[in-house]
Image 1 (tube, helix red, strand yellow):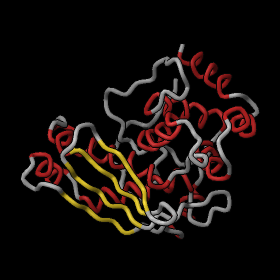
Image 2 (cartoon, one colour; image 1 turned 30 degrees about the vertical axis):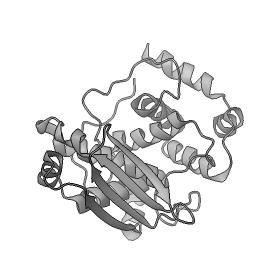
Image 3 (cartoon, helix red, strand yellow; image 1 turned 60 degrees about the horizontal axis):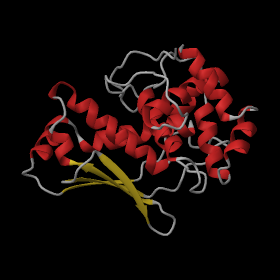
Length: 248
């Protein structure tokens, strides 16, 4: 059973992985700060109940900045880390709009480095008032990961991409109360299901494992068997079987 720290509010300038066993890394993090791209907010309808609830619950600048810094610390460690390469995302615009669903992210520009997060106003309007700030920040953090992660040159399974985003959300202590570890048929079921599998790998193979997965998705086109064997010496199905057995 994977166990994480109890959820607590996480400002951008504190350690986000629980107990710190690497004080020298925190010292480096204080000396080196990630560059946060241009951030913008556009609200389609200020009269919509979702817009009112959003503006009353969170500060958009803080949510976007904190989410960006935290995910960069998790996926890239520090700006000068020679083992990882931060993508050249130049701007992130958060759109609050009237559409069904929850949220999605798209990219544009010559290098796909101009990102847009679209967040559903009706969804915001129906969030439980007791945890509206946590849910808004959780969704924003998840979508921000899509603005800064790699995808194996477009060949990685969607479940892995979504799982990495929810793994970051998990480590930022922003997981919803309905999330739980449970046996699923496929390792790439996505979202929290794959996030908990990734956390199992992080604990088994050591801190920075998901960071290594993300970096490998940058370096080459994703081919499932080669990808996992080159990283861990095992096929992903073998690793997933070990994870499933750990739950039972």
